[in-house]
Amino acid sequence: MTYCDLHTHRLPVRPGDRAIVAVGVRRPAPGPSVCCAVGIHPWEADAGALPLLYGAARWPGVAAIGETGLDRLKGPPLDVQEELFLAHIRLAETVGKPLIIHCVKAWSELLRIRKTSGGRVPWIVHGFRGGGVLAGQLLDAGFYLSFGLRFRPEAVSRAWAAHRLFAETDDDGIDIRDVYAVLAASLSVAQDDLAKQIAENFDGLTV
Image (tube, rainbow, N blue to C red):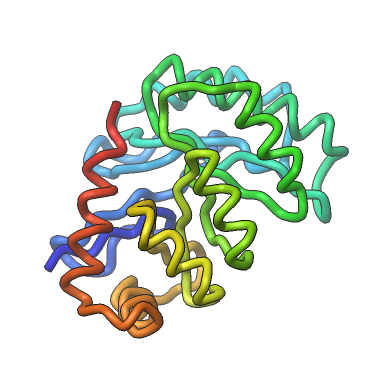
């Protein structure tokens, strides 16, 4: 069984695991064997870093753009964050890479941007902890949802039914196997079945 970690800040724990490692644009490029995502976190939204982002998007091994997004509780004003978010969206479309999104209490803005931006690349909300109603709104708008150890079962159930579910460890320092175990238990499905859907979603990220 293959374990896939959609969003992590460290290399895979065990050989054979698949992971997208978040790498800041101000850090040196990782080796070409590292599957990574590059972006400017909304907490650090700064238009002056865009040239670094555009350069990082050309690194070997880049599989996704982000994390990027909107955070009403932390970081620069929301209009500054939105400007950077829109730049990430345009870049993701240009390079044909999925978008990994951080969103805190700015869901109406995120849904508005999704509606007006359109696009062909997958948009994935990482670390989703919202309820079933919000999950349904996001899924109806075409989002994927990625979950760690903290989640609401009704949201996981909706993402599972929509075949738009991912698992992640983020920066928690845990094994992705622990996340699979709690998600499978919440869904009352075999871990093999969960792993199959997540692997299929992982494989479908390329456009």
